[in-house]
Structures are given as C-alpha cells and as structure tokens.
Amino acid sequence: MNIIVCAKQVVDVAEVKVDSSTKKPILVGVPQKISDMDKNALEEAIKIKEKLGGKITILTVGAPDAKERMKELLAMGADEGVLIPPPEHADYHVIAHLLASAMKKIGSYDIIFCGEASIDMFSGQMGPRIAGLLNIPQITYAQQVTVEQNKVVAERNLGEKAVIIESPFPVLISVTKEINQPRLPSLMAILASSSKPIHEWPATGVTAEALVPKLQTLDIKGIPMQRKNIIYQNDLDQSVGKLVDELAKVGVLR
Image 1 (spheres, helix red, strand yellow):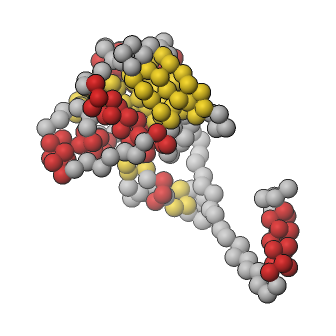
Image 2 (cartoon, helix red, strand yellow):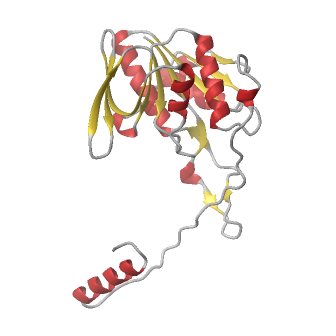
Image 3 (spheres, helix red, strand yellow):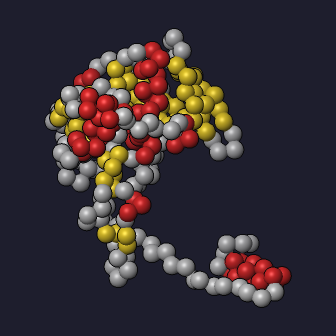
C-alpha cells in the first residue's frame, strides 16, 4: 500500500491566552505541534502498513520549521516527508491545490489519510477539497477502517448513527479522534528517524489562479472566559432551585 498522510503544523491551542484589553489571541511564544487528528490519521496508516506492507509519505504545507514537527511523524513510522512552502496569506483553496499538486507528483497512491479537521481552525474542509481536485472517492469522519484486497471498508460517524461505506482505491479518508490512540515513538525509533528524508518541494504544477486566495482574514479575536463564582449554601433544596433559576436566566436551561 502506498499511503499519503496530510499533516498540519498548528499552535498548541491549549497554551493560547487572550489579551483582555484587545481580545486578540497572544500567539507569540506559543509552542507548535502537529494537529492531533493528523496523528490519528498517521496511526491508522501505520497499522495498515504493518499488516500489508508499503510506504507512508507525510505531506505538509508550512514554514521551514515544520520539519522539526515532521520528524516526530517519521519517528512514529512514516517513511519520508514532503514540505511545501506556501505563498503569503494562503487559504484553504491555495493549500488544497498545493497538496493535490504534490500528490499528483507522487503519482501512485492507494489511500490518502487526513484528520477530520485541524485543531486550530476546525473547518473540516481540506479532505473534501483535495478529493474533489483529484476526482477520487472520499470517506469522511471515519471511526473504523478495514483494508481488504480490492477495497477499503470504513465505519463513518454521523453522530447518532454510524454508516458502513466501502470504496475502491484510490480513496481519501478523513478520520475522527476516536479511531485509535496514536503511538509514542521509542528512543530507537526516534534515533532511526534521523536518516529518513524530508524533501522540500516548490509549488510547481499549480496555476497562478490556484495560488490566489479566495478568502481574506480581516481579524482574529478570542473570547475571554470568566466564571461568575456564585456559591449557593445552606438549604440544599433552595440552593438547587436558585441554581436552576440562574441557569435559565443565562439561557443554559430552557
């Protein structure tokens, strides 16, 4: 199996603070990491490789420092990485074209794995956009994947229901966080990953129109979360009643 895994370097949203005066997120000095569900995508790819053999290629559109984060994915079990520097102000439209172009350059692939969404923007757009550009089937929100001889069978999470879908190869699959638990690489795997290549490919094979963003981000603001710290004491029944009334006032209960 030749498998491609799309991975994105993001800021660690758990470490982001909001400036109370400007309402803007403070991003300076915030550590970066690979988006969580992209690691779930890689773990699923590794499980397939362990069963059937093959090769796993990591694709990332990002700044040069993303190579450091890609090394963690190589240590987990990927075979090589490809980094594509984006133009300034790249949006989903541009990044999807860059990734699809790199996949066409790779040529032969059976499965493309993505996380269902990135933890920073959580749009869920990238997988479907890539599948559309490549004109291949897609299975989104997969919570279980089984690879058979000539097809892949996936259980798709639709909230209250789950749907079983099968597709021939090639196919793009976006996975949920519930599909698996990504492994932690061993020390030996980390040392061995230093010899695995990370290539840097320019944005070739992409039209000038495809590199023009369709969206413009005007501003980003955070929402500071403050607790009211209301404490109800004394009679339990009265306290419960007051709590219910307060929750109804703020719209939590209807």
